[in-house]
Amino acid sequence: MPVHLYGVLDADAPFAPTKGLDGRVVRVFALGGRLALVSDLDEPKLAVTPRRLREHDAVLRDAVAAGRSVVPARLGRLYADDSALTSALEAYDSVLDVAMTLVRGRVEMSLLIAGSRSSPSSPLSEHASERGGGGPGREHLRRLRSEREGERNMLHGASDLAQVAACALSGIVVAERAVANPAPPVLVARAHLVARDHISRYLVTVKAVAAASGSAYRVAVRGPGAAYSFAAVQGG
Picture 1 (cartoon, rainbow, N blue to C red):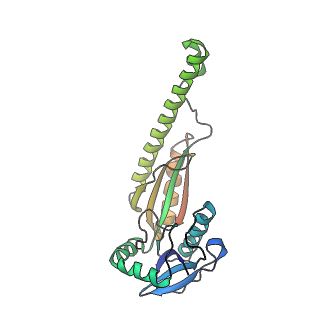
Picture 2 (cartoon, rainbow, N blue to C red; picture 1 turned 60 degrees about the vertical axis):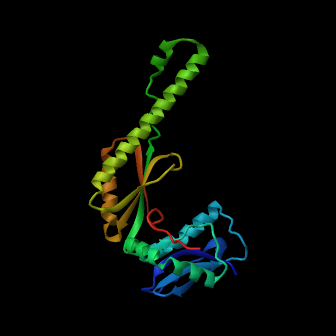
Picture 3 (cartoon, rainbow, N blue to C red; picture 1 turned 30 degrees about the horizontal axis):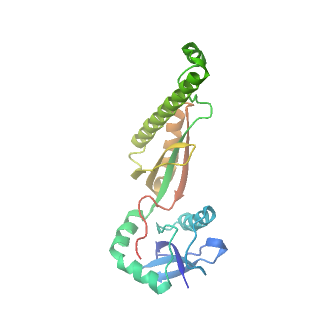
């Protein structure tokens, strides 16, 4: 029966996961000195949906919340059976060792920066645009240019704020990754690998950076979660 892999853990303590994809049972089976979290599926190809993404991630977040170190697998592929999964992971054993060493005792935290709802979208005032004249067509083009300039300014400011946060977090964060094309309304997102013992310091520091940034931006944190941005199961 096809097998879906959620992730791989150190086999250092018992772990009882909750339900997984489509409410299916999550099995735990041993792979040498590790544990694999899997579900059996009765479909030959795994259809990726937003709901299944949430369910996949929820299993890993449960493991993180239980204090386990997780090398996550990404949703989207199936293994023919347990034997095929075992063979695939064994072929990448040394890579998995490196990934496990990286995430052991660490979690991923996400720094999210969005524009404030009260932030102006345009650097031009109504009075300035009215002075230009030229009819409704030209006025529309001016507004479009103004909006694009405002968006660029907001993005540059968000990037600058992310750099300020990176400096403030330099003694806390193990590694940082820029998140490409974050979902609106987020302008800039950074993934941070953080030791579990430093989560509180991380949150306090981000809160201080947000307070010092004024009202132009909203700063939020997501996590702790599995370190997708820094380590992932390979194989197959």
